[in-house]
Image 1 (cartoon, rainbow, N blue to C red):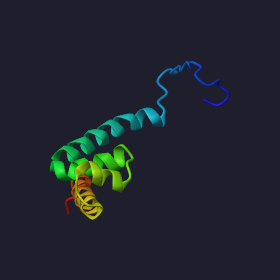
Image 2 (image 1 turned 180 degrees about the horizontal axis):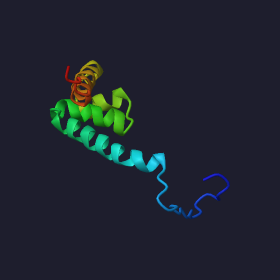
Image 3 (image 1 turned 30 degrees about the horizontal axis):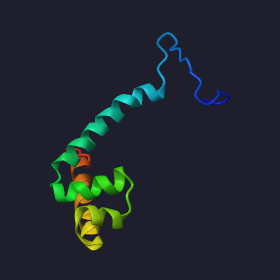
Length: 97
């Protein structure tokens, strides 16, 4: 919050029925998070591990390769295939014609 000291408690008051855009979007964020988690769980472990290590734990590809015990090129391939599968699952369905 601008002007608030670091670590200061900030009180938020919701005024009579006024709904902020952030409040409306919170439900959509939760739904998207659940969809992403479901998509991640659907990946085979050999694809999920590099995706999580690289994107969630922010590990470099070389470190992911060491952990997975495979070459860096294999890690790149597994991440690419895993992300393609996730994108396919998260892609909105085409509107009926």
